[in-house]
Each structure stands twice: as structure tokens, then as C-alpha cells.
Length: 173
Image: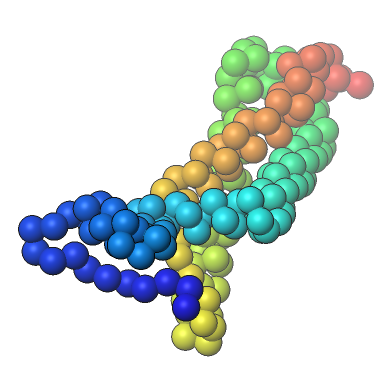
């Protein structure tokens, strides 16, 4: 037998019941929260699941940042003459940087919405077909949104540098 679920008598706390069970039987008795943390720590210490999951998330973050950075950089390189023309007409560097960041933010927001929507749709479709539960709490959406913002910011830095050093004279070449 792995474990037994029990509810203490009215007026007896879960901690008191656990202490009494351990005293009388010599077996480990845990409250609900203690059992949850014991299970989590078992997976952390005895399986590779958390490490593999963490590596997967890190690689996804790095690859996503690299692809987004390459996309923004190519956009900047392809439109360098237009940025030079804007500079020749007197547009300030902060304004141009704002334009690049706004475009990056829009692309990031669209990608975030499509990704979260696809994940939610996949979870809804497989919910009844699998014994594994699909769980997407609100805080996962916040963390994912923050990660997307960081990725957009980091990937935009390379293209922003290219825009800042462009000479307005490039328009006349």
C-alpha cells in the first residue's frame, strides 16, 4: 500500500492527526500540503523530468529569440534606404527606434496570441482523448507574455543598432 487518505475527526487539526498516526503506527503521515511537496521533491530529486523540461524551455527561448532577431534584422537591412530617407528628412533616432520597437511589439503580440491560442485549442481538443490533464492557469499566460516581451526586446537590439548607424546619404547612392 502506497498511501492512505484520511480526514481527521472534527476539532482535530490535520497536523495533530498526522502526529498521532505517526506515533501509533511508526509510519509517515503527511498533511495535504506536505504530501504535495514530498511528491514534487521526489520528481525533482529522482527523475530527470524537471531538468529536461527546463532545458526544453531554455532552448525554445533561445531559438525563438534568434529567429525573431534574424527576422527583425533582415527587415531592417531590406529597408535601410527607407530609414536613411527618414533620417535625411529629419526624423530623429529615437523616433526611428520607436518605429522599429513598435513593429517588433506588434509581431510579438501576434505571435503570442497565435501561440497561446494554438496551445489552448490543442489542450481543448486532447482533453477528452487523454488521461493526462491539460492545465493552463492565468499565471502561465503572464509568464509567457513576459518571456515574449523579453525576446522581442533582445531580438530588436541588433536591428536597432543597424538603424542608428545608417547614414542619411545612403538614399542618394
